Image (cartoon, rainbow, N blue to C red):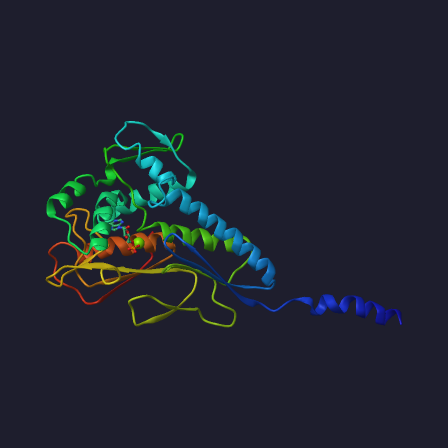
Length: 306
Ligand code: AMP
Ligand code: MG
């Protein structure tokens, strides 16, 4: 009798371990949809954790958005040319330091001081009219990542050109995807997929499978991947079509000020989504800009770029 009692007391514990369930959550932010897919034993706890992660994404948007007039980024840009050093948040500091690193390594193909040009081209796409070359020239003169000065002591930034405008659109989603992945991993989830509008960060594979099946916009292929990041960029994804049929991409060559015209989609697979995001944008300029010959529709780069 006593033995039975012990069995009934222990039995729920033995059979309690819940199976892993696939949980999926989405949240609109940064002009796109963030999607978290991960495997959890407790779906209610998973929902609570997803809400936490999305709150962090909202905070990142309030720091990095160039659309919100009161974002930390825009408040910093308002001081451009004033000679002042401005103390910034850890996130803004980190993303600017990373951006400068990718600018140096890509020899200026990636440049977050591209803001005056992206504003000009955004307006042109809205009006469906090419901007005139004198305005492109004037905006391009304000673009130079070397004029973004970072002071480690006190985490300060000085923008040295009057009219300088930063645009983190080529890197912020990748940065956010990494933060979502690490946030979920810190909470104990292993099989995780984060999709920040095409900037994808992956943890372990789903249970009993070789990897996450990933399809990228603009590409016919699907990939099975785990523990890496992948993203696609390119002229074919968003563009302005001129009367002669030339398509000018939303990705701009900082040296000429013109949208990239080659119909190239660049795919980058790396360890971190922030690197994949920045390199995909940078390589879209490098392979698609200037007077280079046209390449095929798809250009694939798979590496461990940091
Ligand atoms: P992505 O989709 O990651 O390639 O980012 C494209 C966005 O990056 C554009 O919409 C602009 O906001 C920004 N951008 C465009 N050209 C550049 C460039 N040469 N360097 C850095 N950011 C850029
Ligand atoms: Mg990018």
